[in-house]
Amino acid sequence: MAKEITSRNENYSQWYNDIVVKAGLADYSAVRGSMVIKPYGFAIWEKMRDQLDHMFKETGHQNAYFPLFIPKSFFSREAAHVEGFAKECAVVTHYRLKNDPNGKGIVVDEDAKLEEELVVRPTSETIIWNTYKSWIQSYRDLPILINQWANVVRWEMRTRLFLRTAEFLWQEGHTAHATKEEAVEEAERMINVYSTFAREWMAMPVIIGKKSESERFAGAVDTYSIEALMQDGKALQAGTSHFLGQNFAKAFDVKFLNRESQLEYVWATSWGVSTRLMGALVMTHSDDNGLVLPPKLAPTQVVFVPVYKSEEELAAVSEVVAKLRVELHSKGITTHYDDRDNYKPGFKFAEYELKGVPVRVAIGPRDIEKGTVEVARRDTLQKQFVSQNQLAETVVSLLDNIQANLYNRALEFRERNTTRVETYDEFKKVIAENGGFVLAHWDGTPETEALIKEDTKATIRCIPLDMPEEDGKCIVTGKPSKKRAIFALAY
RNA sequence: CGGGGUGUGGCGCAGUUGGUUAGCGCACCUGCUUUGGGAGCAGGGGGUCGUGCGUUCGAGUCGCACCACCCCGACCA
Image 1 (cartoon, rainbow, N blue to C red):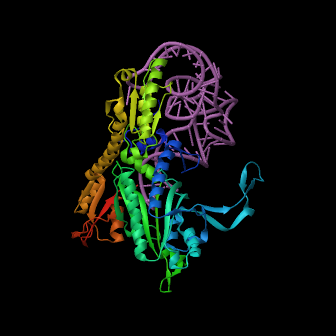
Image 2: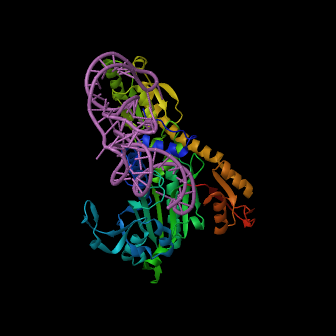
Image 3: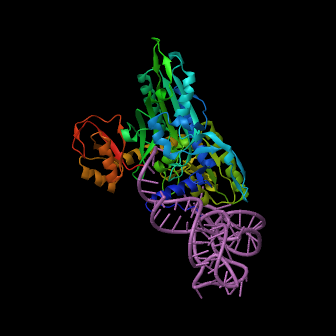
């Protein structure tokens, strides 16, 4: 088999690519910087999407859909926003092709130039706020709590499967509120939803914090993020939620009449997570044998592999497997029975490890005799024999156990790789030699942050919301600081 | 956009100082034997050698240009 995976030690980037491609999550496409999400990868994304969608609905949001194309002029309405995105926008300039008059092929028809060019959305604040203007007149129209599942395009110079592609899938929530307090509360509510999702479904520990001014979303007053630590010691921003203040309301002139019959600008939030979460999932749990999936997001939680010599043995095994699967299904567990006869069991074992199926059950003639099965867990690769009549309850607790173990393992890794430093020398040493999260005092200025980035490539990932106040001195300037920020090299 | 690398059946690669029907492993198809950690044997199918131009009696091989992708940077989720 050409399914060998590069080890993490040898080449972490290659390891990541190997997992994504060889586990069947995604493929490179014929389009530069764009990928194909394959059925197995998409099945995982669907599980994420369904759960997030459920959580959005639970918090009062509705889905809607806004256009892919945004008139170019909309972008110039909000100054910071246009500056943030201008460099990576795909632009539609024409609407027709024609046969090349000079010979072969097809060319853009210059006669079909658009009056106003269209930007392929890199995010939808502008088109949405242009729309909200016509929806909002009074405080009775507020709040508006809308989410959309969509694709967006950001023309990145350098792309990586799931982590950064020219086109990606995401959801973007866009809400409008009558008061600042309500909007801030919404932005915080949604970053907490993301945090809960990451922890409970992805088994990925994250830190909730606020972005520094220079890392803030283009057009936001405050950006909250969840930050996760990958196995190579680099940080990954896994979700963001923005308090947009009245910036977009002012840019698009969205006012409402309050209870006192006064006109006010509307307060806004936006928040999103993307298929980047797939990359986070891979880099949080997987190992040199392949993908490792938390049971709650695994398309197949348990795979049955038969071991047999004769048709009779296969028939006997299949009969037992059928019964066991019914029992598991009744407990809400998803299973697959791999009875392909052109692959040996050993091949299948390796394949399901590569694909990260949480639990594998092997069953052969010896098990039929003894009334047992062999149960193997993907996270630790441990195997045990379990009697058939106890399989269902064993698997139920095993799946819970795996889900918890993955989280704990990732949390321990993060704690081992989180360092508090007091001096800049110490800071540089830790960033260069170990990586991970580095907690350091910072004077709060963009200048100092830029200097640190220049020196070390490390950036402020966030200022954690639950970071206790303490008196300290900025590691660079020595100026007083009340709180530590988290620094790291980042994706 | 800078630096490095790679383009040869589906995948991974070999291909000598240019030389005749372009090979190998895996995968695929057929058959038999196998099956508790990536099976064996036999037979079989599949390639305008990334694209273009050039040098030459002759180009996978030499030259120039272009394209694509990967890795490392700068920029970003």
